[in-house]
Every structure is written in structure tokens, then in C-alpha cells.
Amino acid sequence: MALKTRDLRGMSDEQLQTTLRDLEKHLFQLRVQAATDRLKAPAEVRKTKRDIARVKTIQRQRELAKLRELPPDQLQARIERLEKRVADNLPGKRRAHRQAQRLKRFLAEKTSATAKR
Image 1: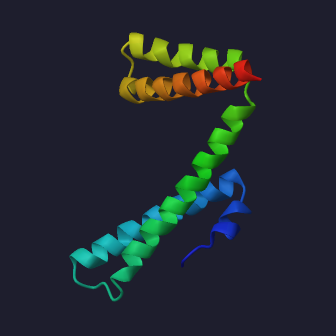
Image 2 (image 1 turned 30 degrees about the vertical axis):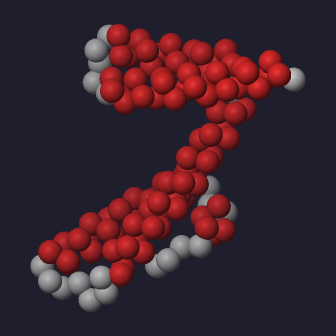
């Protein structure tokens, strides 16, 4: 079931998400088979993991492309929402903190790049 990168790039975001879910289910089934000694091709686990990594990489590249298109004020608004979530001690605060830190770095790079022009 090895997927080619060019095929994945041609998919929409929804198709990628569906493919990712299917691959994760397949990996789970392979792990169950491995645990019960019914796995015929052990290399299939590695191939599936690599396919999952390919899909996630493409999703992240698309996410970064969308962030690059956002103006700095919208990035700042996202950072403030994430920091509010951390300050309010809501569930997911660790993830929100990490995302806010990444967006701050991204915003700093973006503003320094526009300042140099």
C-alpha cells in the first residue's frame, strides 16, 4: 500500500485526513497481528509508518504555507487566544503553550524578513 508523495500532494486536505485515519487503523491491525504471531510481512509495519509520516509531512507543509499567507496581526491574534487558553488553565494548555511558542517564533521570523526588505 506504499503511497507515492506525488499522489499524496494531489489529494485535498480532507482526502489526506481520511488517508491518515485509514493508515493509522491499518497500523493498529498490523500491530495486533504482530502481537498474536499472525503477521506475514513484518516489513509492512515499517512501510505503513513511513506512509503515515509522508501524510503528516504534507499536512504540515500545507499548514505552514497557510501561516505564511496570514498577516502579522492575525498571527498575533492566534497567539493571544492560545496564551489565554494557557492562562485560564483549560484542557490542552500544554499543547496550546507549544503552539503559541511556535507561532511567536514564526511571527518573529516573518517580521524580521519584512523589516529587511
